[in-house]
Length: 161
Image (cartoon, rainbow, N blue to C red; front, side):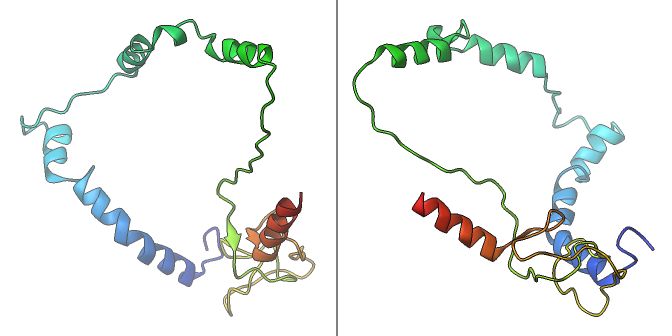
């Protein structure tokens, strides 16, 4: 049955979407004729593929540091300089968001555990769940992507505060 209960539409949709980018990347990358000849069968001699060394990279980066950074005390010195400077500084506030995963199809009351990769939404007639399973709340659920209204509310709060 598989991890999602054998739901064919999920698998078919995922393969269809990913195949457009994954298959050409494989064919032009790891499975390219040149690479297979060079690395797998050792039949070709051109181009020579050089193995990269992480140690050599680190040595090159550390060796190219400016003198002011070589002791690794740059940040400490920067804070010391700021502490000694008594002139007034403007306060700048910022907010950083990273990968919020907004679900524009989130529906309160839908199961947060289901036979689909993304729950807390109506996934159609193939969607099944057991009675008594936890359902999606108004503002979101730990197992699901964030509803749009939660993100909107968060931005309004940030703007006011």
